[in-house]
Each structure stands twice: as C-alpha cells, then as structure tokens.
Amino acid sequence: MRRQVKKTSRKKYSFRSGLEEAIADRLDEQGVKFTYEEEKIKYIRPAKNATYTPDFVLPNGIIIEAKGRFLTADRQKHLLIKDQFPDYDIRFVFSNSKTRISKQSKTTYAKWCEAKGFKYADRLIPERWLEE
Image (cartoon, rainbow, N blue to C red):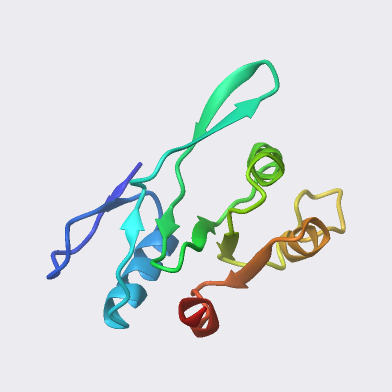
C-alpha cells in the first residue's frame, strides 16, 4: 500500500515505503531534483516482456532503488536488467544491507551487491553519489 506524503512545497507523491519517503525528504532538504517512478524501462524476462519502474532517477542519471526486503524475484530482475542495459547505473539503498538474503544463507544484501557489481548504501543516498 502506498503512503501519502505530508504536504510540502514539492509535488505530492505517493510512496510505497517509509524508506522511499525518507530518501525523498532528504533529497528535498538538499535541494536535489529527482523524479519518482516516472520512467519506465522495458526489459525482457525469459519468455515474456516486462517493465521495471525505477524508484528514483537523479539528474546525473543514477537510478536509486530503495529496498527494505530484497527478494529473490528482485535480485533476478536486477540481474536481467543489468545484463540487458549495462550502461544503466542502478544502485540500492537498503533499510539494512546486513540482512541475509534468506534464513539459510550467509549472504547479505551487501555481499550480494558486491558480488554482482552493484553499489549500495544504508538508509540514505550518500552525498558522493549526488556529486557524481
């Protein structure tokens, strides 16, 4: 369910999570313009076409995906997109990158990102990403 954002001077958005809302608030505070779920990226899943809607796209082209839970389907989707669109710079902001991808696995979200070549951060977009 989407959460309604408190009224601010910016365009009213409906966010899917508190993490997305916190990132948007922080970007607003820093005066960083962004789009939220406006772009559509067509990609191909084996045997069917699919669409990925990035959470945030920064002016420098960096795509930010805010993740509390990082499910198998999410990981598979992002590997397909990375393979099909290697020039896209997709990065993750996790609620907690130390979370394991499953109860049976020792792999954390952070370790998965490192192994697959994705940049990631916890809770907020790092300043250095905004300055790139």
